[in-house]
Amino acid sequence: MLGFGIIIPNLAYYAKDIGASPTEISILISIYSGMHLIFAPLWGRLSDKHGRKPAILLGLLGNAIALVGFGISTDYIWLSLTRSAAGIASAAVIPTVMAYVADVTTSEERGRGMGLMGAAMGLGFILGPAIGGVMGRHDIPFFVAGALSLLTFIFVLMTLPESLQKKTASEHTWVSPRELYSKTSIKSPLTPLFLIAFFSAFSFAGLEATFPLFIKNTWQYGQKELGYMFMIMGVIVVPLQGGLLGRLINTFGERKIIIAGMLLNVLGMVLLVNAFSFLTLTIYLTITGIGYQLIRPTNTSWISKQTHIGQGTAIGIMDAFLSLGRVLGPILSGWLYDRTLHPPIFKNFFSITHLDGLYGNGAFSYVVLAYILLIAAGFLYFPLRHVEQKT
Image (cartoon, rainbow, N blue to C red; front, top):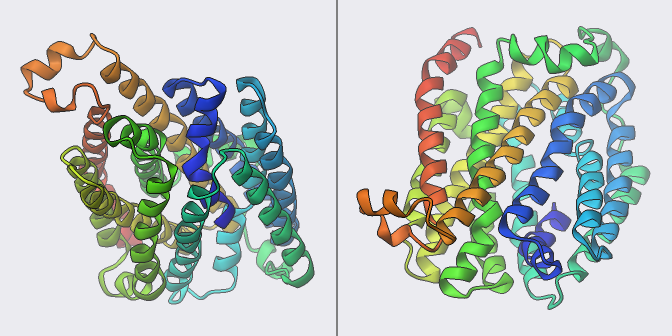
């Protein structure tokens, strides 16, 4: 995640240097998530069958090669191809690591374990964007991130023991690839939790896709300022996930934490529309980030406690829903950003609704994303209570 954090302040700017439009940049981000959507359940199933370590190793090595390929790309087609390869490879890593945590923790320890994983990921967001923001050139961070992925591959190869026990693997019901994408996910009693993954990722990924362009267009901030914003957000989120989340889950339960996270996410995005300085931008972005980072590890912990098809498979399916959100969110956000930046499609709407302040800077997309997430929270409130009663 350190490598992932390093490229965050640079991906949009690097693609823009090559000539990509805001919509094309959003599509580029969505391609990465689209590969997660397709391959995360398959990687999860393979890790349930053949072990966690092989999946992690293959993912890290493939990711290293893809990142270097992205850094040497000179046109949009090659950017798309290498970003797709990175998506396929990274789909093997994070869900499998989450399944690894589920393997080595008890039900009571699960929330804390997932919180610590979230904190470790957040730590990458503290250091990564700050490092990436001061590198000067937009291509260098991809080489650095690729080298970090390769070093992690070596570390895993030499030190990480296999967590999946044969007797544990034999306890799970195996599902076919067809079932992974149909019956298992759509008709599963865990579908409300899968939908939480989708809608939370949909809104936050939509924000991530256009936020660098939004602050550039409105305040002339670049990758350096963006890196500082993510660093400050990480400083607040990491202690919350690593030190408090497990206790919060054990005290209030997963459902209340997830609903609170969704409401914080909505609040932060709405407030971003009214930001007027670097400080307010950072505060509102942090509120949004806290909300999102409460949801993901809590949701993963809840799913891992309830699944009967294997930790890797269930978490892989969750990651597929999450990835679908990361595909569609940036596409909608990028399209709305383009339209509000280049009228006239929303001109009358802004006048009628007295939202003229949003006209021309792209912030309207955050209002739309916030409303979608709020509606989703309302619709999923009672289904989540039903899941909670079965826990």
